[in-house]
Length: 384
Image 1 (cartoon, rainbow, N blue to C red):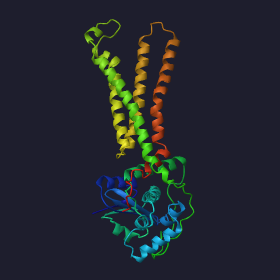
Image 2 (image 1 turned 90 degrees about the vertical axis):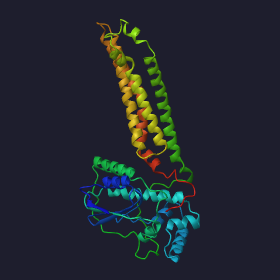
Image 3 (image 1 turned 120 degrees about the horizontal axis):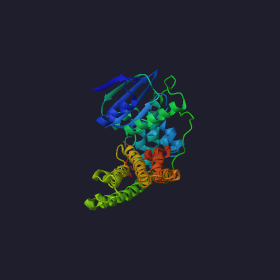
Image 4 (image 1 turned 135 degrees about the vertical axis):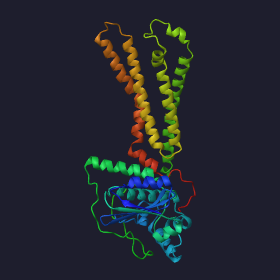
């Protein structure tokens, strides 16, 4: 079974969503204006990406990041060639030269992301997805000096981030469609030879080993802070519901200051806000828990939870302003209403601050980098 089509009709993001949701394994091949690229999937997760626009010499990249030295690379290449290319280069480095699997994995994942994001600028061409199991043996036949991540990358996250980067380029008026370029081989025809050096493109600094646990800590702290805010809001909402449903409404409805005296108007005045706060806080708690567990789509759910918090604050302050207006006399001065408006704006800004700060944090490039770190990889795991 295969999926064939044009990039103009079905974009890369949509293709990746289809493969991810179906949890298929196989190779997605793309061709556009003389360029070629391949994305390898295993059970719906991205495990490799290559493009003729990138000279993906991972050995040189690992040296530049300080993960290995050139002597280790040369010895690993020699061992791989002597044994007939039965193991991936990354596996040899981890098992025989005591190179950190997590350190290699971080660089490999970053390089896969760079390749995939660059493919979102391909606005024309063709694609073919061929279903097949890409085991370590198959990966070695594809490219023996390549590396594979310990765990695959989430295609839905890659699609979301790739679309965001593309939108930012369009907004800044930058060139979207990459120019046609001659095909450049990622390595020489003889796989036993050392790959050519990567072009001198600027790279972000390598992470220190002690920083790699920061991603899980960042996620955990963020989730717990949000759950604390959601828990406080839930208690406030429940207290309001207990107060509302614990009253004798026959007595309340007979009080002369409630005009019009109907049960619905009383609910709008005293019961609607507690219910709104309770439901919104429950959703926020659930979204924060999903984010803490790094469940699929949890980032979007937490963003929606932050927006719901802002919406509840606005509704709450509007109702407070409504109560303020109802207390006004028939000849109230303009300053009375002005004070109410100022209170509405100030109260909304004050109560919305935690949710607005959460939104800025979740949508920042810093949080994106933190979520991409391989912080949850089990210790001692080895590349596929």
